[in-house]
Length: 195
Ligand SMILES: Cc1cc2nc3c(=O)[nH]c(=O)nc-3n(C[C@H](O)[C@H](O)[C@H](O)COP(=O)(O)O)c2cc1C
Image: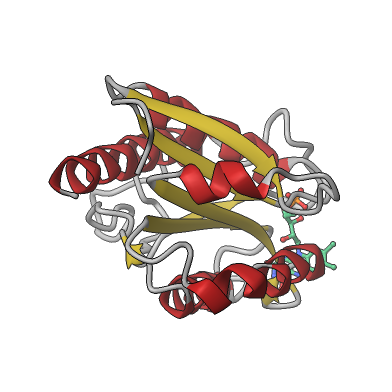
């Protein structure tokens, strides 16, 4: 769908206190590690966001903190704004993926990822999951394992409630986020070349 031969991945995210933004930046780093793929960041609550960039994307990655067991209100506003695109199915066949950050180990983050996946389905997008086995789930495992929170549908990260985005989420989640970004970029590239 890109006009150039480069595959375009857009990350649309909301972050109230910077933790989701720090993970978004690391996902972007992973995307950029794949040759021939470029990344653009869009803040979901930016009133002047460029919908044309989204229209031209090969893949869109959605990121929201988990607030009250759901996507944030600001991210939901973006979802509802996108109904204008839904009417024309403008994002049909684009690759989609999602991530969320919350302070509890669970924190009901799966509900947020499920919301993002259903949202992508409404837009007839192709959902790419996390693409990693669960870590940190055996007697010899540790929180240093990739995917320490054991997600499958998308990327989960956890940020201690009393720590700023300079230290939370911890490095394991950033390593997982970088690999996730690379996975999504590789899928987007494959899908774009097949189109
Ligand atoms: C309004 C609000 C609701 C929250 N609800 C949850 C929740 O349901 N589960 C949870 O684990 N953390 C919850 N948190 C904590 C945030 O998910 C956590 O602080 C996260 O790192 C915030 O991301 P951000 O810095 O990108 O805004 C909530 C925080 C706020 C401000």
